[in-house]
Image (cartoon, rainbow, N blue to C red; front, side, top):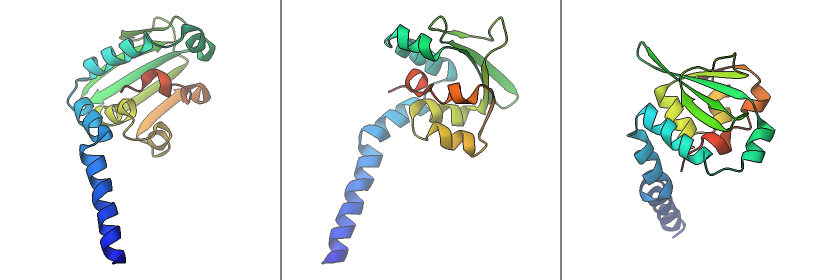
Amino acid sequence: MVWKEIDMRILRLQRHWTHGVMGAAQSDNANLTKAELVMRIKSRLATVDPTKAKEVGGVFLFNIIKGTSVYSWTLDLNNVTVYEGEPEEDPDTTFTLNEHYFKQLVSGSEDARAIMQAGRCSVTGDIMRAMKLEPYIKID
């Protein structure tokens, strides 16, 4: 009797994670290109409170690696904007990671701290400020 209840709970959890909201959102994001993900981040940034974004402040450069190519984009919370390419002046923080981990980072399928602590993402500069970015880079 106890094993049957445990099996049913496991089955419900599996359904939730493979067919529920999290599974659908993650699979949708997995098929998007880096540029499409950045456009979604740009759209998300347009919905946040600019005053709070400016309180966090800073310029963040993301270098996303796929094979031998690098796609760079910038999140500028001083001006509350997102654009392709590198900033004109040195960024406060630079992230370098591969495309797979970038997709995990912005989709929320893996915690940002876990990605950084596991060495899957190189972060240079203001790491404490970088830890405050999740509301601005995580897409639904």
